[in-house]
Amino acid sequence: MTLGPLTRTLLNDRGSQILMVSVLAMTVLIPLCNLAFPEGSALHVSTYMVTLLGKYLCYALLALAVDLIWGYCGILSLGHGAFFALGGYAMGMYLMRQIGDRGVYGDPVLPDFMVFLNWQELPWFWYGFDNFAFAALMIMLVPGVLAFLFGWLAFRSRVTGVYLSIITQALTYALLLAFFRNDMGFGGNNGLTDFKDILGFNIQADGTRAVLFVLSGVALMAGFLICKAIVQSKLGRVLIAVRDSESRTRFLGYRVEHFKLFVFVVSAVLAGIAGALYVPQVGIINPGEFSPVNSIEIIIWVAVGGRGTLYGAVVGALVVNFAKTYFTGAFPELWLFLLGGLFVISTLYLPKGLVGIIGQVRNRLAARSATAQTLKTSE
Amino acid sequence: MQIKHIDQNAILYLNGVSVSFDGFKALNSLSLFLEPGELRAIIGPNGAGKTTMMDVITGKTKPDQGDVIYNGTVDLTRFDEAAIANMGIGRKFQKPTVIESLTVFENLEMALAGGRGVFASLFHRLKADQRQRIEEILLLVDLQDRVGHLAGSLSHGQKQWLEIGMLLIQKPGVLLIDEPAAGMTDIETEKTAVLFKRLAKDHTLVVVEHDMDFIKALACKVTVLHEGSVLAEGSLEQVQNNEKVIEVYLGR
Image (cartoon, rainbow over all chains, first blue to last red; front, side, top):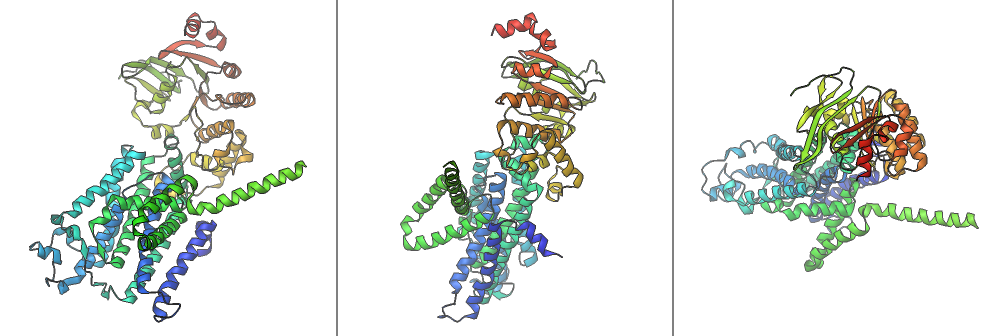
């Protein structure tokens, strides 16, 4: 297998190359610094930091999924948090089953919250989640199938633009309300938590944390390559055509709804995987993840980073979340204003986001030197 | 559904097509007959039904009554836009609608006949003969120097030609062209008329146009629409001397 030409065609721009190298370096170095250097060493990275950064990598994968549909195909989903949360719940259900009789009530099968609700047996939709392979399949299948059904109905009826955004928002809100209910069987407003181990490894252990971090990094890189392969293909150009001029694309003989459905499902599956990697690292999944605000935040990451570039989405997710962690600690009451301000500034002055700044500066310099050149020749 | 007489020679045959929007009759029992390889100009005052006629042919609007027969056998009213486009009816909109953030080459590649499915597109590789076909078209519409430029950076006239190229590359049976000369410079208009006359040998072209100089340059059969049906048909000279046409145009 020749990897050379493959990477050359897939990573054909500087931004993608830099991003892949950076994520790769992070994936290798951070767990290494956590495990190999003792606490107190200048090179030591705390487990807290590993978990925090691992969380960001999951967010970055989620942002990538949103950029694929929004940046390339113009589908502004304001409900993508739903697919993330569903992937997270599927993982959470596996982790709950792993607890076994170590729960507070010591029931070998039923999770604590079911014992608390006086349930006698496991609901049918919890079957199979004690098997990791089954759970892994569900992590992709549940968001994928939901996206397929939702997308099939929405795109076939030609729901576009702001109307589509509103119904995606309604989708995640409906799921939020449903998952809040105790009798849904997903732990109500407490969600799923108190996880003990994953595949037999203690979920709190430094080693497990490091592995989860590496997996998040690998998933991000793999997701990036998949998205890149899609947007580099002719299908990617059809997506851009749909974004720029949907009816033109239709008159060219492309069934626009099929293309939208395809990327929407791919994107939902990626979001589900991101959610599944997120849950063991943060140790909890609750209905709050379905909150419409979360989905809107994803859009902000992508817009701030730079939409329609893929690597911009990753940069945006990392930068905004770093800022969030810092500012919510330093100036908790100002954070939302700063987030709003960031969004306004990037919309008004940075149409191509943070990653577009380099290009903007370069263009300005080029324009300046061109004017200088013309002045010189006219003299 | 009754088709009274189908002429096997017609490439496109509209038979008594009516469309109304909220009681307003946009098309009123319109009949039109096009021969293969014909260049036809359609004129008429605003609201005469020119655009609605195009919408009906391309499947955007379903007629309340009447048939649209393509190639003597296919009733187009039963298909949607994508299916009709794939049957070989190309439509050129009034405003140039090329894909602005793709290059000239990529625009033509998208239009190229062949795999329109999701997975066919995902695994699509451009073959040598397809590349050659794109180059032929580039030459035909005189855009060979702009091949790598973004379509958004082209001039108005160039965008129009690119769009015509995108239609041509699909080897269409019928080309519907809405006001191609609008917004073009005189030189561009002249060039476009020459292009159309050359194309008419291998294609059937229907041109909707306001610009009388342009129609004169096309030197073809003219159909005048008024209130959703055909008012007159013939050479430009015949039509211009027609009493009813003069009344409609001057009485406005």
